[in-house]
Length: 136
Image 1 (cartoon, rainbow, N blue to C red):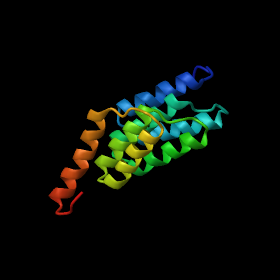
Image 2: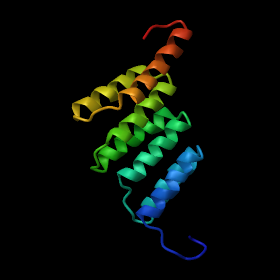
Image 3: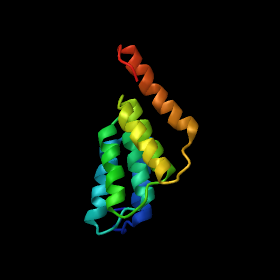
């Protein structure tokens, strides 16, 4: 798009971030999110969800949690997809306490968690903890 001198909009940036998610390229996803802001475009919940999911797929739980915070700071409310990806990222990173905190936060926001997704993430964290000899 840049070479063709076409102006990118929120939709095209979000599509690019989503492609990065599918390709497990969390760094590129975050770079596109930054370029979006540089272009004076405000990321929307779809942009953030794709970036959070890219971090989740790349096992970057810290960045996924940071992006959830940025979503709130941007006055956008995280949804089931946002929280689900964050919970899964924390589960993959063996951060079960953070995963539980996000699940609790999600319930407090009156969002219905996808039980299968959440249970899988928390179960994964539990299995890893038990394998290492600690308890969940």
